[in-house]
Image (cartoon, rainbow, N blue to C red):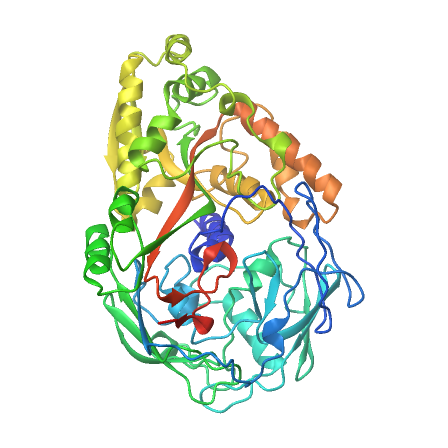
Length: 566
């Protein structure tokens, strides 16, 4: 189980940014730049790359950079903008029942706590660093980062935020009581505080996504931090303070007096917990809320509401069909024909049209084509080029011995996943194969999906800020839970090579080598058909048209700068 907890933690880390940034990336314009540059506070140049550029450059203060430094210079200066209304109501769909941010990853109420607690930086909508507490990041040595922070940041209790608080916060996230480590590669024995505004963070191994992880790591006051009180009290340095919190009901934030930076523009923000989709749509219709996600089936209706604009954004998440190749099940173990039978029986266009009301994109690879460093040679291979073919599917099913079997297909109970399962049930029936659908609630989902004896196919997802992260997602999943690991799981074409390539892919710094690995690992997944992407997700967010909502990475709202225009 210890190994399983570590692997689940890896999945949590991989999803941290996706959860906090609402899983929305604005527009898929085929601009695949991945220039996460390192700059000091004097760098203001903009380097332009073409649509096939995939650079991960590490630059000093004299180099061209896309990093956005605007938030590192404002201090307490007024923005000159006045909001026409002083309150805002936002829908969130998940509440973890605690105010401790470390235990709320993957819960979207974490966005509210992100206004109470500061981070070193955030990532803007162009995939660049947007400074917050930090003012500079030197990554010239990938295993030793030098982070410079502001000297005018104060917590609500008046304590000054120093480099010591930053190191404490990183250590806290890595060593939460009863929880596995979230980073795994920070070398705390050698990391150190240089002075009050400078910290040296060392890594045991480089991770190309660590800049995203740090963007979601909240900063705590070391002096006043209490392991028990953090669950029901907050003490941050952000632009808002907590006014009221009722579990599974709401969280009300009030603009903080004496905030060190540019004051927030809206006085009060209420985050309302609404789990039911119909409840959210009704709240938009009545004007009870100003911002909410919109279920696929209700997008066209919500577009007709006079107080709603609907923003559609691409994401880096997919809805995918996973095959259980663990020896305890056997139907898909060492049986490529069986996996091909299912792959060719499914019509992804029908899944997109029915389960997602046509909102999304067809799968083009074993991960989303919207990921920032995808390049064309990775797309439209194998089943993603020649997929739906019922006659071919039937021949594979007969050859694989599936005609007299019953395949157990599981899902997490979400409406789109349930509908996807129902469609697959029909597709398989058309070729003479029986499927039994089992739907679970979110509370029991993880226990079931990591039980190698409980199912044959599952509707789940892939995710990643980079292709490397998405490819390692599969490695973690196929080695996941307490039932399997890379040695015990059944073989698939290229298994040993895939594990070899995946084991350290996050630490590769050379772009050419990384792209080469991307291609080889993608080719292995295409050949093995261990899982298949059905639909690339999009997000739908409705908001009052009088709101001005600056965006961060994945379309997340920068609430600190949001305001009512009229």
